[in-house]
Image (cartoon, rainbow, N blue to C red; front, side, top):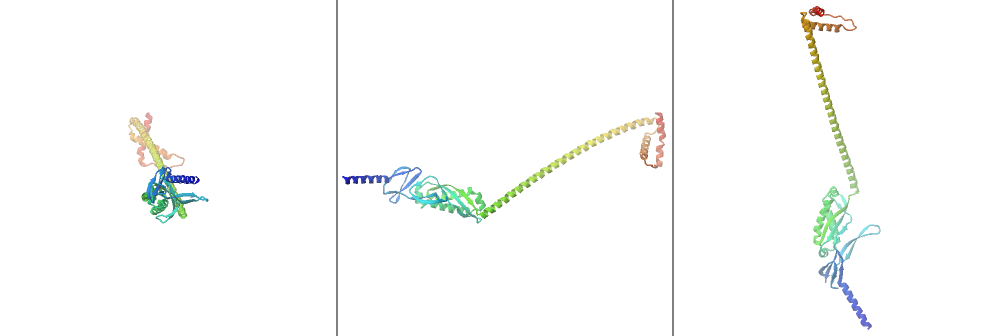
Length: 327
């Protein structure tokens, strides 16, 4: 009785072990590659799957995992597992030294976003997929950076990311991997180059500041000259208008004076005609007398010489006297 019970218990235990070995539960977004007697058999889908115990066996693959050490440094570890993650994965590669086209050694680290789309190819087309992707990314990054100068490397991250993505996507296509994008995190030139770049940047800023100051002074001089030009034009216009108005005033004054003199001469001529005296001789005598009065005016003693030709003019004074006596 005891022996039969023990045998039954053993049979039940073996049955449970066989059932457990044949039942595989696959989580969502994961899969397993099953081999039967060493050859590819199937790819398990998420959920409950039944395999033949001891005949079907999940294929062991490598995975890359980052752990944080005691001193805070990140440590990359390679582990083996039968689970294949179908989600998008991120590989953060450590910094590596690359040489640009102008022979400047620069440290660059990159992020790689990829996803396994064909588990069978990822298992059988490449050994140690994480290590292969890391080495391929490093070599491709060296090739791309080697075609660019340092200034282009610092200012063309999007271009470098696009080139790396295209190269890696083509290379990993036969591995059943889809590279979604590549991102450069840090580009660190040598300290001497950084110092030179800072000096160059400072010099460029000073140059731009001087250019802006020169442009400002230029605009200021232009505006100032235009203001002076307009001021001179306005002053010239004002002087022109003033001279025009002055000339018009003098012209009108001369016209009025001429008209007054003409009226005076007309009246004198009418008055002189009654004495039978030539009006021109009369006017000439009057001007002559006025001139003599101006010549003899003043405090100094003066000697006045009257030319002989003036006697004919002075002879008309008697006529002038007769004229006043008549009036």
